[in-house]
Image (tube, rainbow over all chains, first blue to last red; front, side, top):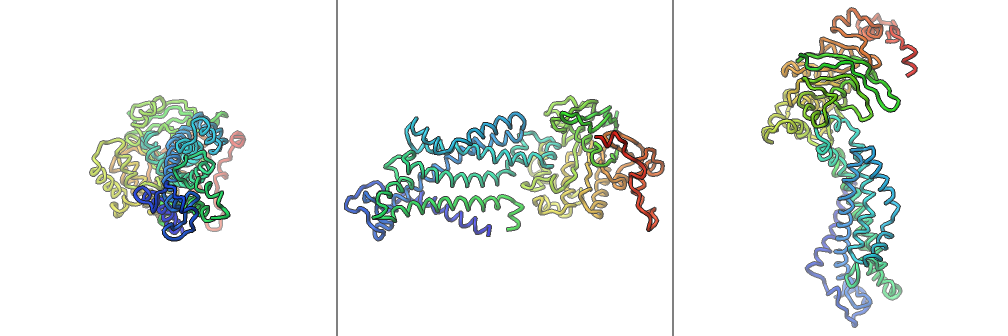
Length: 270
Length: 281
């Protein structure tokens, strides 16, 4: 069962990654070229998923859209983890004032939703892929800090940390050799959940025009473009919606599977 | 000169200054062994942690602890880290939790070695396997490559012992090392510990609540009650001529072989009644 989750998650995420990589070297049609004669074609040959209101091949746009999705996901989750995990680990290990400082600050930032932050950034710096990534990344820091702090507290209370101290391991050594490997499954799960959330947030932002700007295709702005033809050509909205769903589901399943795989006690049982 | 010299050690905890150890003094010669007996909360483990300088931040320590001529209470973290694992080490009670579940046990033992010596990785591995063999683990090469959850309780406790002994420390503190094991495994592990300690010539502070277990390893025994030492002597003295009523109770309850069937078993309270002050705490 657990193994199946991991496999399905890997396959779905792999699908998105392959689409993004493939689009770097090959797309069935030019994803930017407007062909007035080919507007709103139904799925068929040569346009497998049909064409949109500009006569652009939907499949080509979908493949290129995967690039933006992955880049935004990787960068924003990476940013959040890179800042959030060390902060949480430090707070959990040092405790006391450091803990209070980090966690109360995290509480304050928890109150700011990613979308609001993205709107703020878009109005100050102008909407772009970069502002969307920064907003989603910054807004996800508290979640990573909180998860790694909780995990660290748990590990710090164990006998093996006491044993490590009793054999002369430094705080840095304990953080690196004992805390980090033990909270890695938690971080992995948080990362994949964060990835799924980042994909959704990015889609929402580019749907609203606050993220990646046209003409670069993203799943969000494809949804937006499909909106005005929803009664004439409803499938146009289905394709990017399906892509978002597949990516989000894939990362969630991957996270669950990964948690079990990274935990050697559970690996044995699988 | 003695290896460990504790003078008038008092440890208090928290804002309410709850006394965990009260004016404890002890002295342990190089290669000597001292058993510490007492019930939960009598301050045995706190004493052990104080010797390692591992008390939590809210502990207030007074008195002096000298280990191999160095004052533990006034050393900084770096100074303490140099002693821990090298001059003094500890065998923990719960073999389930004293090993990191994410690390192969061989590497965990090697870590202790690596912290205090600059042995080459290949050499370290050899030394670890030799140590695992020495604490009586069959097939030490395979054990070294195992994760803790793949080993039995007895095997894990031997690994914990190997971790404590690999740097040939001068003092090994054993905090109830066999309490979590069943009786037959307990006897084997104790015999092995005794043998390994003899071989390395390390001194041992052996903490337990079980008089029978202590008597297997130590000649000298110290009885603790509510943070105070109530009696010190050889195991034989303690068994034959217990002085303090609490010790009398302990001895009586451990002499099950002398019981007449059908008679009520003795309890410590038959001999020693906690006074009002103790109940108040």
